[in-house]
Image (tube, rainbow, N blue to C red):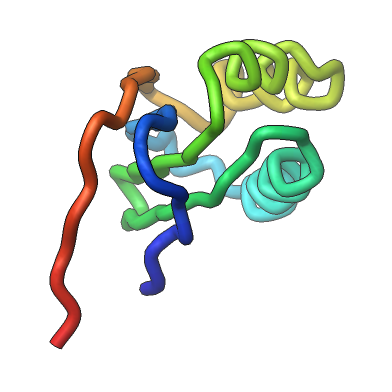
Length: 107
């Protein structure tokens, strides 16, 4: 896994945690579509994601809360969000956080 290349704080993180129903038809395609929408949306900084068949966590990084809100309202994203609620997800939690500090270590 590689880390998102984020700027110096502050910036924002949208943390999407989800449990899955097991319905996988079109899930990979919809995930890729949302990622492409994000990559082309102004203010998107990067994403880190991990998971298995039951639980996934994706953290996307944005330059402001306003850009997160605007991305959430994109027409194609709204369609995929509904399909997620109706088909892919047993449950999900969305958290928005302002990143004040970041630091790390690379061996």
